[in-house]
Length: 85
Image (cartoon, rainbow, N blue to C red):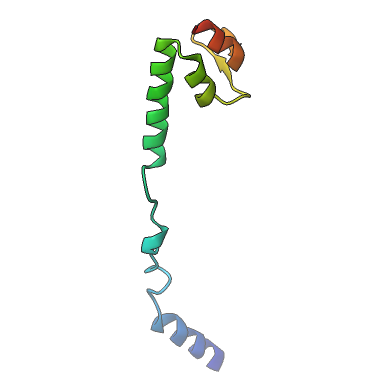
């Protein structure tokens, strides 16, 4: 009975400690968000593709990238860049 009473007192004495934890201010991300970075990269990709800038596309697209387009055709990075020149 004493163990139960001690456990009950511990649980009721500190009810909100587990729920009140928040992230430390230094844990907040600095700079642009991931979503903003991805949007910017998408804009740069589109602009480079429209301009036929193969060097910029080569910087943006990963070496192991493979695309499947709306009509079902497939292309590797090299094939995609060659069609944009």
